[in-house]
Image (cartoon, rainbow, N blue to C red; front, side, top):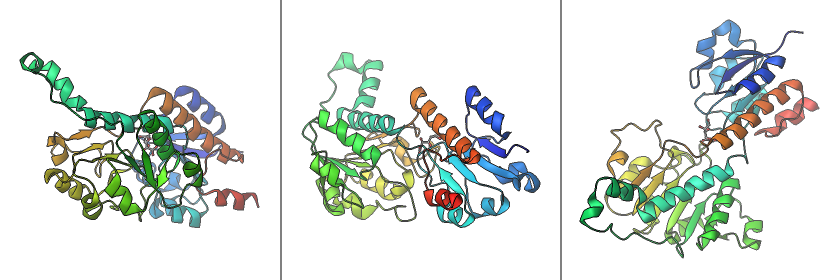
Amino acid sequence: MAKPLVVVSAPLPQDLREQLAAQTEIIDVPTGQAIVQTLGAEQARQVQGILCTVRSKIDRDLLAAMPALRVVSNFAVGFDNVDIPAMNEHGVLMCNTPKVLDGAVADLTFGLILCLARNLVAGDAFVRSGAWTKGAFPLAHDIRGKTLGLLGMGRIGREVARIAHAFDMPVIYHNRRQDSEAEASGLASYRERDALFAESDVLSIHIPLDPQTRHSIGARELGLMKPTAYLINTARGAVVDEAALIAALQAGRLAGAGLDVMETEPLPPESLLCAMPNVVLQAHIGSATVETRRAMIDLAAHNLMDALAGKKPVAMVNPDIWERRQA
Ligand code: 8YV
């Protein structure tokens, strides 16, 4: 029997490539490049699996062009690049990489919080420029005792809460579903959504991007926040109305923002965010460590190989498709 045809549009280490090549025929598509257009209609019709990053758009057009497609495996925990209702209609399994990146993203969240509160980026420039020889660096702020608000209490939110306890930060959260375990263990206390924005000294976002959450943090929410508070976003840029965030920062209605994600990535250098001293920016690096990325690509590649071999993948976004297939 011919090996199934798969598209690889993600950085795949050689050992995993060899494992995948033993059971499939691989077509490489440069990361982020439109898959169907690169392949052409004839080849697209035969593709059974895709391994891709969040830069590949998996939409109705792609699904219509790939009637043999059985599985899409994202090299990411997020799947806002994928039209899940359309995947369900076409009976295509969606896999992702949860858990393995929780620690890395939570660590970066704290990196951003500390950069803002202690003014570390400016402090580095202060020393390098020789300004230290002329006087002391201005005082910054403690994070100890300050309230951390978590919007979203999934795996990453919980990991951030655990770290916050080591910094003696009281933790409050808002989530679609109240997390009784987090409450019972003393990890975090539930707040209504508006109260979370109003009470937090640091508000950190840990929700996925979907049609309901897009621009769900806008002028109204930012207006509820303390003028001394910081906003941290390591989730997805588009959950925040970036124009409203810029306006709030410019007006001093917010003390600062730590952003690993933006509405447009890569962030154009002419963005007003780049000129703001009270903003710390990173290039969507939440999971970008050697160890975490290796764990992610391992999981993503095995999800793909398992699904094609008829073995239950470890991480499925729409397990109903799998169950339906078994039945
Ligand atoms: C990126 C992420 O996917 O996992 C996610 O949802 O946003 C990141 O880890 C990363 O760039 C790997 O493609």
